[in-house]
Length: 75
Image (tube, rainbow, N blue to C red):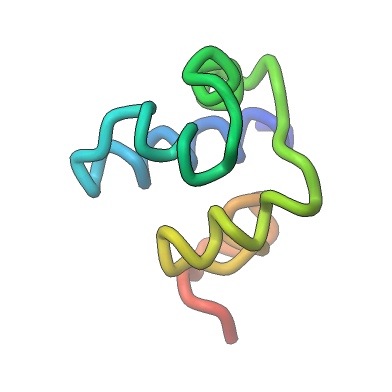
């Protein structure tokens, strides 16, 4: 699996685990719902500026989101 595919899968799983609609994440990041959908499908990535926002929101490490680690928490 590629980094983009892992990122997409983990983003989707984290959002669904929290029961949040895509609209909540879109508003938090200042992007459209369509962009969140594309991130979750793996057709688009996020920016470096938004990555830490996502990590803090879901309480996970960037390494986890990018598939560099299977540990959710930062070391």
